[in-house]
Length: 499
Ligand code: NAD
Image (cartoon, rainbow, N blue to C red; front, side, top):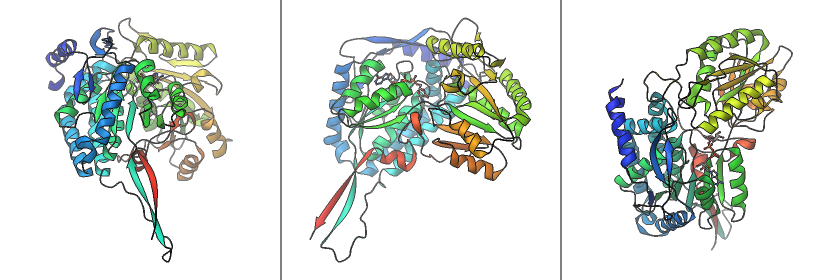
Protein backbone atom coordinates (compact mmCIF):
# COMPACT_ATOMS: atom_id res chain seq x y z
CA UNK A 1 0.00 0.00 0.00
CA UNK A 2 1.20 3.55 -0.68
CA UNK A 3 2.77 4.88 2.51
CA UNK A 4 0.38 7.87 2.80
CA UNK A 5 -2.52 5.45 3.13
CA UNK A 6 -0.85 2.83 5.31
CA UNK A 7 -3.21 1.06 7.76
CA UNK A 8 -1.65 2.82 10.76
CA UNK A 9 -2.42 6.19 9.22
CA UNK A 10 -5.99 5.15 8.43
CA UNK A 11 -6.44 3.99 12.04
CA UNK A 12 -5.06 7.30 13.29
CA UNK A 13 -7.48 9.29 11.14
CA UNK A 14 -10.41 7.11 12.25
CA UNK A 15 -9.54 7.51 15.94
CA UNK A 16 -9.17 11.27 15.59
CA UNK A 17 -12.54 11.49 13.86
CA UNK A 18 -14.38 9.83 16.72
CA UNK A 19 -12.67 12.04 19.27
CA UNK A 20 -13.13 15.37 17.55
CA UNK A 21 -15.89 17.64 18.83
CA UNK A 22 -18.90 17.97 16.52
CA UNK A 23 -19.02 21.64 15.80
CA UNK A 24 -20.00 24.27 13.28
CA UNK A 25 -17.79 27.04 11.91
CA UNK A 26 -19.58 30.34 12.49
CA UNK A 27 -17.97 33.78 12.55
CA UNK A 28 -14.47 32.32 12.76
CA UNK A 29 -15.25 30.16 15.82
CA UNK A 30 -15.98 26.45 16.16
CA UNK A 31 -19.22 26.28 18.09
CA UNK A 32 -21.79 23.67 19.14
CA UNK A 33 -25.11 23.54 17.34
CA UNK A 34 -27.52 25.67 19.38
CA UNK A 35 -29.99 22.84 19.84
CA UNK A 36 -27.08 20.59 20.83
CA UNK A 37 -27.85 17.88 18.27
CA UNK A 38 -25.39 15.67 16.44
CA UNK A 39 -25.79 13.02 13.75
CA UNK A 40 -23.84 9.91 12.83
CA UNK A 41 -21.60 9.63 9.79
CA UNK A 42 -21.08 6.13 8.35
CA UNK A 43 -18.39 4.32 6.40
CA UNK A 44 -20.26 3.03 3.31
CA UNK A 45 -17.83 0.11 3.02
CA UNK A 46 -18.85 -1.31 6.41
CA UNK A 47 -21.86 0.63 7.63
CA UNK A 48 -19.90 1.51 10.79
CA UNK A 49 -20.17 4.91 12.45
CA UNK A 50 -16.95 6.82 11.79
CA UNK A 51 -17.82 10.24 13.16
CA UNK A 52 -20.51 12.48 14.54
CA UNK A 53 -21.26 15.88 13.08
CA UNK A 54 -23.10 18.81 14.62
CA UNK A 55 -26.73 18.99 13.56
CA UNK A 56 -27.25 22.64 12.73
CA UNK A 57 -30.78 24.03 12.63
CA UNK A 58 -32.42 27.30 11.66
CA UNK A 59 -30.94 29.09 14.69
CA UNK A 60 -27.42 28.16 13.56
CA UNK A 61 -28.14 29.25 10.01
CA UNK A 62 -29.34 32.60 11.42
CA UNK A 63 -26.06 33.00 13.29
CA UNK A 64 -23.98 31.95 10.29
CA UNK A 65 -25.81 34.28 7.90
CA UNK A 66 -25.40 37.17 10.37
CA UNK A 67 -21.66 36.43 10.58
CA UNK A 68 -21.40 36.24 6.79
CA UNK A 69 -23.31 39.51 6.41
CA UNK A 70 -21.09 41.25 8.93
CA UNK A 71 -17.95 40.06 7.14
CA UNK A 72 -19.41 41.19 3.81
CA UNK A 73 -20.21 44.75 4.90
CA UNK A 74 -17.46 45.52 7.41
CA UNK A 75 -14.13 44.28 8.65
CA UNK A 76 -11.03 43.14 6.79
CA UNK A 77 -12.79 41.18 4.04
CA UNK A 78 -15.03 44.07 2.99
CA UNK A 79 -12.07 46.42 2.61
CA UNK A 80 -9.60 43.91 1.21
CA UNK A 81 -8.26 44.56 -2.30
CA UNK A 82 -8.96 41.81 -4.85
CA UNK A 83 -5.28 40.88 -4.76
CA UNK A 84 -5.54 40.26 -1.02
CA UNK A 85 -8.47 37.93 -1.51
CA UNK A 86 -6.60 36.13 -4.26
CA UNK A 87 -3.55 35.73 -2.00
CA UNK A 88 -5.67 34.05 0.67
CA UNK A 89 -7.25 31.78 -1.92
CA UNK A 90 -3.80 30.75 -3.17
CA UNK A 91 -2.75 30.00 0.41
CA UNK A 92 -5.80 27.81 0.84
CA UNK A 93 -4.96 26.01 -2.42
CA UNK A 94 -1.43 25.37 -1.10
CA UNK A 95 -2.82 24.13 2.22
CA UNK A 96 -5.07 21.67 0.40
CA UNK A 97 -2.08 20.41 -1.57
CA UNK A 98 -0.10 20.04 1.64
CA UNK A 99 -2.92 17.99 3.23
CA UNK A 100 -3.97 16.18 0.08
CA UNK A 101 -3.29 12.64 1.32
CA UNK A 102 -5.17 13.20 4.55
CA UNK A 103 -8.09 14.83 2.72
CA UNK A 104 -8.24 11.98 0.19
CA UNK A 105 -8.33 9.47 3.01
CA UNK A 106 -11.15 11.32 4.75
CA UNK A 107 -13.09 11.66 1.50
CA UNK A 108 -12.77 7.93 0.82
CA UNK A 109 -13.81 6.96 4.34
CA UNK A 110 -16.80 9.26 4.18
CA UNK A 111 -18.12 8.70 0.66
CA UNK A 112 -16.64 5.29 -0.14
CA UNK A 113 -14.81 6.24 -3.34
CA UNK A 114 -11.41 4.68 -4.10
CA UNK A 115 -8.60 6.62 -2.52
CA UNK A 116 -6.82 6.66 -5.89
CA UNK A 117 -9.67 8.69 -7.38
CA UNK A 118 -10.31 10.94 -4.37
CA UNK A 119 -6.58 11.73 -4.28
CA UNK A 120 -6.10 12.27 -8.02
CA UNK A 121 -9.47 13.75 -8.93
CA UNK A 122 -11.48 15.29 -6.09
CA UNK A 123 -8.67 16.56 -3.92
CA UNK A 124 -6.21 17.21 -6.76
CA UNK A 125 -8.69 19.32 -8.74
CA UNK A 126 -9.85 21.47 -5.83
CA UNK A 127 -6.69 23.61 -5.56
CA UNK A 128 -6.83 24.17 -9.33
CA UNK A 129 -10.34 25.48 -8.95
CA UNK A 130 -9.18 27.90 -6.23
CA UNK A 131 -6.16 29.03 -8.27
CA UNK A 132 -8.24 29.55 -11.39
CA UNK A 133 -10.80 31.61 -9.50
CA UNK A 134 -8.11 33.54 -7.62
CA UNK A 135 -6.92 34.70 -11.04
CA UNK A 136 -10.32 36.24 -11.64
CA UNK A 137 -10.35 38.29 -8.43
CA UNK A 138 -8.71 41.37 -9.95
CA UNK A 139 -10.10 40.92 -13.46
CA UNK A 140 -13.81 41.25 -12.85
CA UNK A 141 -14.79 44.55 -14.38
CA UNK A 142 -17.69 46.54 -15.73
CA UNK A 143 -17.74 48.18 -19.14
CA UNK A 144 -17.82 51.68 -20.53
CA UNK A 145 -19.50 51.57 -23.96
CA UNK A 146 -18.12 53.96 -26.53
CA UNK A 147 -21.52 55.66 -26.80
CA UNK A 148 -22.14 58.87 -28.65
CA UNK A 149 -19.10 61.13 -28.49
CA UNK A 150 -21.25 64.26 -28.61
CA UNK A 151 -23.69 63.18 -25.89
CA UNK A 152 -23.85 65.21 -22.69
CA UNK A 153 -22.84 62.34 -20.45
CA UNK A 154 -21.96 58.67 -20.50
CA UNK A 155 -22.88 55.38 -18.88
CA UNK A 156 -20.91 52.49 -17.52
CA UNK A 157 -21.51 49.22 -15.73
CA UNK A 158 -20.18 48.07 -12.39
CA UNK A 159 -19.82 44.43 -11.37
CA UNK A 160 -20.49 44.03 -7.66
CA UNK A 161 -20.27 41.04 -5.37
CA UNK A 162 -23.70 39.52 -4.96
CA UNK A 163 -23.44 39.35 -1.14
CA UNK A 164 -24.01 36.41 1.17
CA UNK A 165 -24.02 33.08 -0.67
CA UNK A 166 -25.68 29.92 0.64
CA UNK A 167 -23.77 26.96 -0.82
CA UNK A 168 -25.48 23.57 -0.62
CA UNK A 169 -23.52 20.53 -1.78
CA UNK A 170 -24.17 16.83 -2.52
CA UNK A 171 -22.46 13.68 -1.28
CA UNK A 172 -20.92 12.37 -4.48
CA UNK A 173 -17.99 14.81 -4.66
CA UNK A 174 -18.23 16.65 -1.35
CA UNK A 175 -14.88 18.40 -1.21
CA UNK A 176 -14.62 19.42 -4.86
CA UNK A 177 -18.21 20.68 -4.94
CA UNK A 178 -17.64 22.75 -1.80
CA UNK A 179 -14.48 24.30 -3.23
CA UNK A 180 -16.11 24.89 -6.62
CA UNK A 181 -18.75 27.01 -4.89
CA UNK A 182 -16.56 28.78 -2.37
CA UNK A 183 -13.86 29.72 -4.92
CA UNK A 184 -15.89 32.04 -7.19
CA UNK A 185 -17.66 33.50 -4.17
CA UNK A 186 -14.33 34.45 -2.59
CA UNK A 187 -12.95 35.77 -5.88
CA UNK A 188 -15.81 38.23 -6.20
CA UNK A 189 -15.74 39.30 -2.54
CA UNK A 190 -18.84 37.43 -1.42
CA UNK A 191 -19.08 35.59 1.90
CA UNK A 192 -20.36 32.05 2.25
CA UNK A 193 -22.47 29.78 4.43
CA UNK A 194 -21.78 26.21 3.31
CA UNK A 195 -24.24 23.40 4.11
CA UNK A 196 -22.57 20.11 3.10
CA UNK A 197 -24.51 16.90 2.47
CA UNK A 198 -25.40 15.12 5.71
CA UNK A 199 -24.06 11.82 4.35
CA UNK A 200 -20.56 13.23 3.76
CA UNK A 201 -19.75 16.29 5.89
CA UNK A 202 -16.18 15.44 6.92
CA UNK A 203 -13.97 17.08 4.31
CA UNK A 204 -16.03 20.28 4.36
CA UNK A 205 -15.28 20.57 8.08
CA UNK A 206 -11.59 20.03 7.36
CA UNK A 207 -11.79 22.68 4.62
CA UNK A 208 -13.11 25.11 7.23
CA UNK A 209 -10.19 24.33 9.51
CA UNK A 210 -7.69 24.91 6.72
CA UNK A 211 -9.39 28.19 5.77
CA UNK A 212 -9.04 29.40 9.35
CA UNK A 213 -5.40 28.28 9.50
CA UNK A 214 -4.43 30.24 6.39
CA UNK A 215 -6.04 33.39 7.77
CA UNK A 216 -9.45 33.95 6.23
CA UNK A 217 -11.16 36.64 8.31
CA UNK A 218 -14.01 35.61 10.61
CA UNK A 219 -17.36 35.13 8.89
CA UNK A 220 -16.07 34.86 5.32
CA UNK A 221 -16.47 31.06 5.26
CA UNK A 222 -19.06 29.55 7.62
CA UNK A 223 -19.88 25.84 7.69
CA UNK A 224 -23.14 24.52 9.06
CA UNK A 225 -23.56 20.75 8.90
CA UNK A 226 -27.07 19.40 9.26
CA UNK A 227 -30.09 17.95 7.49
CA UNK A 228 -31.15 19.23 4.09
CA UNK A 229 -34.78 19.75 5.04
CA UNK A 230 -33.80 21.73 8.15
CA UNK A 231 -30.46 23.55 7.82
CA UNK A 232 -30.52 23.56 4.01
CA UNK A 233 -34.11 24.74 3.88
CA UNK A 234 -33.38 27.47 6.46
CA UNK A 235 -30.58 28.75 4.24
CA UNK A 236 -32.86 28.80 1.21
CA UNK A 237 -35.59 30.60 3.17
CA UNK A 238 -33.29 33.10 4.86
CA UNK A 239 -34.16 36.68 3.84
CA UNK A 240 -30.57 37.89 4.19
CA UNK A 241 -29.04 35.35 1.79
CA UNK A 242 -28.54 36.86 -1.67
CA UNK A 243 -27.78 33.73 -3.66
CA UNK A 244 -28.13 29.98 -3.36
CA UNK A 245 -25.59 27.90 -5.20
CA UNK A 246 -26.88 24.35 -5.14
CA UNK A 247 -25.60 21.06 -6.47
CA UNK A 248 -27.83 18.06 -5.95
CA UNK A 249 -30.90 16.29 -7.20
CA UNK A 250 -33.38 17.80 -9.63
CA UNK A 251 -36.15 17.18 -7.07
CA UNK A 252 -34.51 19.35 -4.41
CA UNK A 253 -33.30 21.85 -7.01
CA UNK A 254 -36.87 22.40 -8.11
CA UNK A 255 -37.98 23.08 -4.54
CA UNK A 256 -35.06 25.48 -4.05
CA UNK A 257 -36.02 27.38 -7.18
CA UNK A 258 -39.58 27.69 -5.91
CA UNK A 259 -38.39 28.65 -2.42
CA UNK A 260 -36.04 31.31 -3.75
CA UNK A 261 -38.85 32.98 -5.68
CA UNK A 262 -40.28 34.70 -2.59
CA UNK A 263 -37.23 36.86 -2.03
CA UNK A 264 -35.95 36.70 -5.64
CA UNK A 265 -32.71 35.12 -4.48
CA UNK A 266 -30.28 34.44 -7.26
CA UNK A 267 -29.81 30.72 -7.85
CA UNK A 268 -27.34 28.49 -9.59
CA UNK A 269 -28.58 24.92 -9.81
CA UNK A 270 -26.34 22.02 -10.83
CA UNK A 271 -28.71 19.07 -10.96
CA UNK A 272 -29.09 15.52 -12.20
CA UNK A 273 -28.46 13.94 -15.56
CA UNK A 274 -29.19 10.96 -17.78
CA UNK A 275 -26.48 11.52 -20.31
CA UNK A 276 -26.47 9.77 -23.69
CA UNK A 277 -23.45 8.13 -25.28
CA UNK A 278 -23.60 7.70 -29.05
CA UNK A 279 -21.25 5.18 -30.57
CA UNK A 280 -20.70 4.82 -34.33
CA UNK A 281 -18.99 1.87 -36.03
CA UNK A 282 -16.07 4.04 -37.21
CA UNK A 283 -15.03 4.83 -33.62
CA UNK A 284 -12.07 3.25 -31.88
CA UNK A 285 -14.34 0.59 -30.40
CA UNK A 286 -11.85 -0.87 -27.94
CA UNK A 287 -10.98 2.55 -26.51
CA UNK A 288 -14.61 3.63 -26.40
CA UNK A 289 -15.79 0.45 -24.67
CA UNK A 290 -13.07 0.71 -22.03
CA UNK A 291 -13.84 4.37 -21.40
CA UNK A 292 -17.60 3.78 -21.20
CA UNK A 293 -17.19 0.94 -18.69
CA UNK A 294 -14.74 2.97 -16.64
CA UNK A 295 -16.99 6.03 -16.58
CA UNK A 296 -20.09 4.21 -15.36
CA UNK A 297 -17.99 2.76 -12.53
CA UNK A 298 -16.34 6.09 -11.66
CA UNK A 299 -17.74 7.06 -8.25
CA UNK A 300 -19.82 3.87 -8.51
CA UNK A 301 -21.97 5.61 -11.09
CA UNK A 302 -22.74 8.37 -8.58
CA UNK A 303 -21.47 10.94 -11.03
CA UNK A 304 -23.87 13.54 -12.40
CA UNK A 305 -22.40 13.67 -15.91
CA UNK A 306 -21.97 9.90 -16.29
CA UNK A 307 -22.98 8.42 -19.63
CA UNK A 308 -25.83 6.11 -18.65
CA UNK A 309 -27.78 5.62 -21.91
CA UNK A 310 -25.65 4.06 -24.59
CA UNK A 311 -26.97 4.38 -28.16
CA UNK A 312 -24.86 2.02 -30.18
CA UNK A 313 -25.00 1.44 -33.92
CA UNK A 314 -26.53 -1.98 -34.67
CA UNK A 315 -23.53 -2.92 -36.83
CA UNK A 316 -21.23 -3.01 -33.79
CA UNK A 317 -23.78 -3.57 -31.01
CA UNK A 318 -22.78 -7.11 -30.04
CA UNK A 319 -19.07 -6.36 -30.24
CA UNK A 320 -19.47 -3.28 -28.05
CA UNK A 321 -21.67 -5.03 -25.51
CA UNK A 322 -19.18 -7.87 -25.24
CA UNK A 323 -16.26 -5.48 -24.75
CA UNK A 324 -18.06 -3.37 -22.13
CA UNK A 325 -19.24 -6.45 -20.23
CA UNK A 326 -15.69 -7.85 -20.24
CA UNK A 327 -14.30 -4.53 -18.97
CA UNK A 328 -16.96 -4.33 -16.24
CA UNK A 329 -16.11 -7.82 -15.03
CA UNK A 330 -12.49 -6.72 -14.62
CA UNK A 331 -13.36 -3.77 -12.34
CA UNK A 332 -12.11 -4.46 -8.83
CA UNK A 333 -14.88 -3.57 -6.40
CA UNK A 334 -13.98 -3.04 -2.76
CA UNK A 335 -13.56 -0.61 0.11
CA UNK A 336 -12.36 2.81 -0.98
CA UNK A 337 -9.32 2.61 1.26
CA UNK A 338 -7.99 -0.54 -0.34
CA UNK A 339 -5.31 0.41 -2.90
CA UNK A 340 -6.52 -2.22 -5.41
CA UNK A 341 -10.07 -0.89 -5.41
CA UNK A 342 -11.32 0.64 -8.65
CA UNK A 343 -14.96 1.00 -7.60
CA UNK A 344 -16.20 1.53 -4.05
CA UNK A 345 -19.59 1.04 -2.40
CA UNK A 346 -22.76 3.06 -2.93
CA UNK A 347 -22.96 5.89 -0.40
CA UNK A 348 -25.76 4.50 1.79
CA UNK A 349 -28.15 1.60 2.12
CA UNK A 350 -31.17 3.52 0.86
CA UNK A 351 -29.36 4.53 -2.31
CA UNK A 352 -28.15 0.95 -2.82
CA UNK A 353 -31.74 -0.34 -2.54
CA UNK A 354 -32.82 2.29 -5.03
CA UNK A 355 -30.18 1.17 -7.55
CA UNK A 356 -31.11 -2.50 -7.15
CA UNK A 357 -34.77 -1.62 -7.57
CA UNK A 358 -34.08 0.13 -10.90
CA UNK A 359 -32.17 -2.93 -12.12
CA UNK A 360 -35.12 -5.13 -11.18
CA UNK A 361 -37.53 -2.79 -12.97
CA UNK A 362 -35.41 -2.99 -16.12
CA UNK A 363 -35.51 -6.78 -16.06
CA UNK A 364 -39.24 -6.78 -15.35
CA UNK A 365 -39.82 -4.60 -18.42
CA UNK A 366 -38.03 -7.06 -20.68
CA UNK A 367 -34.56 -5.55 -20.89
CA UNK A 368 -31.72 -8.08 -20.75
CA UNK A 369 -29.22 -8.16 -17.91
CA UNK A 370 -25.84 -8.91 -19.49
CA UNK A 371 -23.63 -8.63 -16.45
CA UNK A 372 -23.89 -7.54 -12.82
CA UNK A 373 -27.21 -6.63 -11.26
CA UNK A 374 -26.62 -7.88 -7.73
CA UNK A 375 -25.49 -6.66 -4.36
CA UNK A 376 -22.01 -7.86 -3.41
CA UNK A 377 -21.77 -9.40 0.08
CA UNK A 378 -23.86 -8.31 3.02
CA UNK A 379 -21.51 -5.85 4.66
CA UNK A 380 -21.34 -2.34 3.26
CA UNK A 381 -23.33 -1.20 0.25
CA UNK A 382 -21.69 -2.72 -2.80
CA UNK A 383 -23.40 -3.31 -6.15
CA UNK A 384 -21.91 -5.04 -9.19
CA UNK A 385 -21.11 -3.02 -12.31
CA UNK A 386 -24.24 -3.65 -14.37
CA UNK A 387 -24.91 -3.72 -18.11
CA UNK A 388 -28.44 -3.94 -19.45
CA UNK A 389 -29.24 -4.24 -23.16
CA UNK A 390 -32.48 -3.85 -25.07
CA UNK A 391 -33.63 -0.84 -23.06
CA UNK A 392 -36.39 1.28 -24.55
CA UNK A 393 -36.91 4.99 -24.23
CA UNK A 394 -39.98 4.69 -22.01
CA UNK A 395 -38.37 2.39 -19.40
CA UNK A 396 -37.34 3.82 -16.05
CA UNK A 397 -33.77 2.53 -16.60
CA UNK A 398 -33.63 4.76 -19.69
CA UNK A 399 -35.40 7.78 -18.17
CA UNK A 400 -34.48 8.17 -14.49
CA UNK A 401 -31.17 9.13 -12.99
CA UNK A 402 -30.22 5.89 -11.22
CA UNK A 403 -26.96 7.18 -9.68
CA UNK A 404 -25.38 3.76 -9.59
CA UNK A 405 -23.07 1.66 -11.82
CA UNK A 406 -25.82 0.81 -14.29
CA UNK A 407 -25.50 1.27 -18.04
CA UNK A 408 -28.49 0.74 -20.36
CA UNK A 409 -27.99 0.24 -24.10
CA UNK A 410 -30.26 0.99 -27.03
CA UNK A 411 -29.59 0.63 -30.77
CA UNK A 412 -29.78 2.82 -33.83
CA UNK A 413 -29.16 1.85 -37.42
CA UNK A 414 -27.95 2.91 -40.84
CA UNK A 415 -31.36 4.45 -41.58
CA UNK A 416 -31.07 6.92 -38.69
CA UNK A 417 -29.66 10.28 -39.78
CA UNK A 418 -28.17 12.84 -37.40
CA UNK A 419 -31.58 14.34 -36.62
CA UNK A 420 -32.99 10.93 -35.73
CA UNK A 421 -30.03 9.99 -33.53
CA UNK A 422 -30.09 13.39 -31.81
CA UNK A 423 -33.82 13.00 -31.21
CA UNK A 424 -33.16 9.71 -29.37
CA UNK A 425 -30.42 11.36 -27.31
CA UNK A 426 -32.63 14.34 -26.55
CA UNK A 427 -35.57 12.19 -25.46
CA UNK A 428 -34.96 12.96 -21.79
CA UNK A 429 -35.90 15.56 -19.20
CA UNK A 430 -32.21 16.12 -18.55
CA UNK A 431 -29.45 17.86 -20.49
CA UNK A 432 -26.25 17.76 -18.50
CA UNK A 433 -23.81 16.00 -20.81
CA UNK A 434 -23.52 13.87 -23.95
CA UNK A 435 -20.69 11.75 -25.27
CA UNK A 436 -20.04 11.02 -28.93
CA UNK A 437 -17.70 8.37 -30.33
CA UNK A 438 -16.94 8.60 -34.04
CA UNK A 439 -13.98 9.44 -36.26
CA UNK A 440 -16.21 11.38 -38.64
CA UNK A 441 -15.91 15.11 -37.97
CA UNK A 442 -19.22 15.95 -39.61
CA UNK A 443 -21.06 13.41 -37.49
CA UNK A 444 -19.33 14.54 -34.28
CA UNK A 445 -19.91 18.25 -34.70
CA UNK A 446 -23.30 17.79 -36.34
CA UNK A 447 -24.47 15.91 -33.24
CA UNK A 448 -22.80 18.40 -30.89
CA UNK A 449 -24.99 21.10 -32.45
CA UNK A 450 -28.14 19.04 -32.26
CA UNK A 451 -27.93 17.62 -28.74
CA UNK A 452 -29.32 19.71 -25.87
CA UNK A 453 -26.68 19.30 -23.18
CA UNK A 454 -24.32 21.55 -21.26
CA UNK A 455 -21.18 19.54 -22.02
CA UNK A 456 -20.53 17.50 -25.16
CA UNK A 457 -17.56 15.16 -25.12
CA UNK A 458 -16.16 13.83 -28.38
CA UNK A 459 -13.96 10.71 -28.34
CA UNK A 460 -13.36 10.93 -24.61
CA UNK A 461 -12.71 14.67 -24.60
CA UNK A 462 -9.56 16.54 -23.72
CA UNK A 463 -8.22 19.79 -22.36
CA UNK A 464 -8.02 20.70 -18.74
CA UNK A 465 -8.77 24.38 -18.29
CA UNK A 466 -11.85 25.02 -16.15
CA UNK A 467 -14.77 25.26 -18.55
CA UNK A 468 -18.34 26.30 -17.74
CA UNK A 469 -20.27 23.30 -16.49
CA UNK A 470 -24.02 22.96 -16.09
CA UNK A 471 -27.18 21.72 -17.61
CA UNK A 472 -29.89 22.31 -20.17
CA UNK A 473 -33.50 21.51 -19.27
CA UNK A 474 -33.98 19.91 -15.85
CA UNK A 475 -30.26 19.46 -15.32
CA UNK A 476 -30.04 22.92 -13.90
CA UNK A 477 -29.83 26.64 -14.20
CA UNK A 478 -26.65 28.62 -14.79
CA UNK A 479 -23.08 27.43 -15.04
CA UNK A 480 -20.25 26.71 -12.66
CA UNK A 481 -16.64 27.31 -13.69
CA UNK A 482 -14.87 29.70 -16.04
CA UNK A 483 -16.04 33.23 -16.79
CA UNK A 484 -19.75 32.37 -16.63
CA UNK A 485 -19.22 30.69 -13.29
CA UNK A 486 -17.53 33.63 -11.63
CA UNK A 487 -19.86 36.28 -13.05
CA UNK A 488 -22.77 34.34 -11.55
CA UNK A 489 -21.58 35.63 -8.15
CA UNK A 490 -21.94 39.27 -9.22
CA UNK A 491 -24.72 41.76 -9.82
CA UNK A 492 -24.40 44.21 -12.65
CA UNK A 493 -25.23 47.87 -12.12
CA UNK A 494 -25.55 50.54 -14.79
CA UNK A 495 -24.44 54.05 -13.86
CA UNK A 496 -25.57 56.83 -16.14
CA UNK A 497 -23.76 60.15 -15.77
CA UNK A 498 -24.85 63.50 -17.16
CA UNK A 499 -22.45 66.40 -17.62
P1 NAD B 1 -29.84 15.96 -2.77
O1 NAD B 1 -30.61 16.86 -3.64
O2 NAD B 1 -30.56 14.92 -2.01
O3 NAD B 1 -29.02 16.77 -1.68
C1 NAD B 1 -28.09 17.78 -2.06
C2 NAD B 1 -27.94 18.75 -0.92
O4 NAD B 1 -29.19 19.41 -0.73
C3 NAD B 1 -27.58 18.12 0.41
O5 NAD B 1 -26.68 18.96 1.10
C4 NAD B 1 -28.92 18.07 1.13
O6 NAD B 1 -28.78 18.09 2.53
C5 NAD B 1 -29.54 19.36 0.64
N1 NAD B 1 -31.00 19.42 0.73
C6 NAD B 1 -31.88 18.39 0.73
N2 NAD B 1 -33.14 18.87 0.87
C7 NAD B 1 -33.04 20.22 0.93
C8 NAD B 1 -33.98 21.27 1.04
N3 NAD B 1 -35.28 21.04 1.12
N4 NAD B 1 -33.53 22.54 1.05
C9 NAD B 1 -32.22 22.81 0.96
N5 NAD B 1 -31.28 21.85 0.86
C10 NAD B 1 -31.68 20.57 0.84
O7 NAD B 1 -28.71 15.36 -3.72
P2 NAD B 1 -27.67 14.24 -3.37
O8 NAD B 1 -28.45 12.97 -3.33
O9 NAD B 1 -26.86 14.66 -2.20
O10 NAD B 1 -26.70 14.27 -4.64
C11 NAD B 1 -26.96 13.55 -5.78
C12 NAD B 1 -27.53 14.43 -6.85
O11 NAD B 1 -26.66 15.52 -7.12
C13 NAD B 1 -27.70 13.72 -8.16
O12 NAD B 1 -28.95 14.03 -8.71
C14 NAD B 1 -26.59 14.29 -9.02
O13 NAD B 1 -26.83 14.24 -10.39
C15 NAD B 1 -26.51 15.68 -8.52
N6 NAD B 1 -25.22 16.28 -8.85
C16 NAD B 1 -25.16 17.21 -9.85
C17 NAD B 1 -23.95 17.78 -10.20
C18 NAD B 1 -23.87 18.83 -11.28
O14 NAD B 1 -22.87 19.54 -11.33
N7 NAD B 1 -24.86 18.97 -12.13
C19 NAD B 1 -22.78 17.39 -9.55
C20 NAD B 1 -22.87 16.43 -8.55
C21 NAD B 1 -24.10 15.88 -8.20
